[in-house]
Image 1 (cartoon, helix red, strand yellow):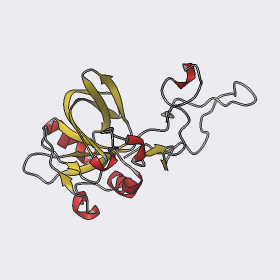
Image 2 (cartoon, rainbow, N blue to C red):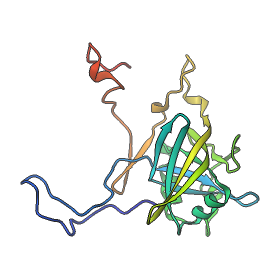
Image 3 (cartoon, rainbow, N blue to C red):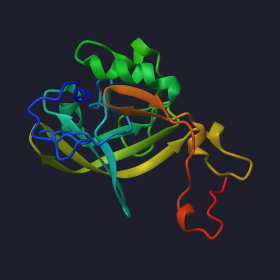
Image 4 (cartoon, one colour):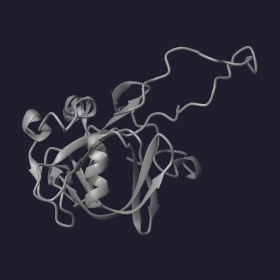
Length: 209
């Protein structure tokens, strides 16, 4: 699933100051979303892989990327079908996300084992996960070999959202879903809000609720 956290200061160079240490190059861009990616070939049981290397790359057209090792069972499923669904993870799904990251779909039917409900997709073949607050239906537009991982660049064909998180004005309240993040080998629930977009330049200097 995700890369193991750096636990020891190996191969470090001389510190750049009394308060800093310089380490060898490594992936230390945290926190990241740990998303559950559902995928599958037509006529076969769908699978779920947990991916920590996922991100937004473009807003128009809406696009995202996920990076997967070639050895992973889901790598071939996504490569063959050219489709997948990114399912956001909240507090209730953290256990399932971890399980799907350490167990292989070659051995386990993860939907059945975790009692997750497949959610029929509108734009792609693989189902989403009904328990997820947001499911992003994606079509691969480019596969880029990068080394240890291949990056699947995909266009978002459709989004399904849990209506329980809509407010009385019809606004989807994503931050009320209890979203989770992954940082250096651990899962965290997002908590205190520190600001809202643009609050640093508003005249009152306050964040709107």
